[in-house]
Image (cartoon, rainbow, N blue to C red; front, top):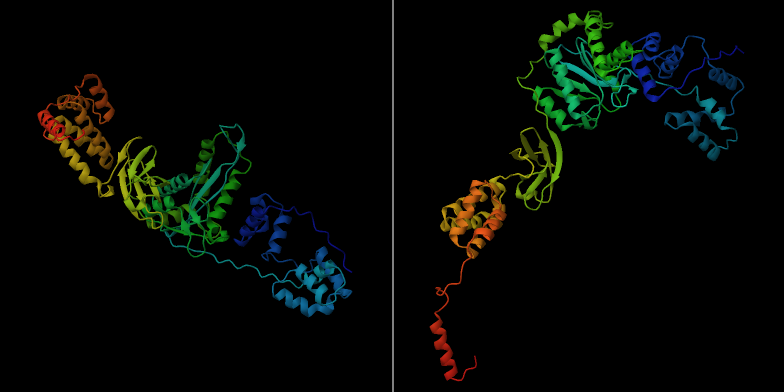
Length: 506
């Protein structure tokens, strides 16, 4: 029997590290280069490459497991009588435990599970995954993703931690924009895209990205759902997003290799401030990455970019205006509350939840299911209201206008006060106008006229101001001796005498 070759110690890696080694090997890199870029031993890289079917074993090489398998086969395994059943089970995708249980239950197998494992090991066949190389025309595509930067001191905690490394790579020239940031968000993700477009001096036709939350809300093979803010920003620049299929990072291998290339330059570096790391990355990008000769294209990146840059689409004349996306439930008075201010919505939306886009000077209300635009208002300070005439209840304007006309008949200042309340509050002015008419019944018109004049000078539409003024300076209405509804007192005397004469009890 041939002497056993004891394999060197191989460290078990995290799933992400293992997948990165496999992806780099599929890009055609040698195990020595992958080991240098990832920081793992060449033995570890070779082991995972052979397990994935990317690297072939040299002729005559046998591991301990292979030799053990040969020994078991030379001594005729106890599973040999069940070879036909085991091969059929493996073809159907059954695993070793299921096969062992079936042998014990239905085929009278009495030996160990380890014997089954040794027997099925050489029967398993691994088909290496075939990867196609994507070649794009100049200006056609850019790929984008996040990685990890070098350790940097956090000003808040004083400790070192790794920021996020943003990389956007042009598919044709491999020229890349690189920047590190502490934290990511929807707006930060979009702003980094804008900085990359400005750095390149143009916009590609498509963006290929991973299914990270900042860009894709719901990953799907056929119908991925983009983040609304990210989709709006890309529409502003005329770019089409192409999310990768879930669990298929090799579809954007260009940016994956650029992230590894950048991390290799940052390896062993430590920075006291994130701006210092960005200065280092920018200088290294211009000095080395931009002037290097690309290993696949065999040409300098700067020469390739000089050919691709004219093919990029021109930048728009204005930057994208960012906004917040929130959800609000419409109150039963027909308004939604955003940042302490109130904005009207269509009457059918009362009691339902709507989507609100809050910009710097504008606010848009969208339907939650169809994302159709329902209303657009200008931003008002906290406590203010914005009302669309179409959102007023149909039964409110006639009665409100009627009360406003009655106020006009009482006096010019009272009418002006009622008109101001109606203009500013709309349907909510009904109760205020009712209060004005109630004050007209309890106080003299001249006193109410003076109170409304004072309110106009103070630019106030509060009913409490009128009440306070009338309580101190107003003249209440006195009882009248004659009224067109109430008869004279003499008539009551005649009725009383007639009733007494006829013996009617009063």
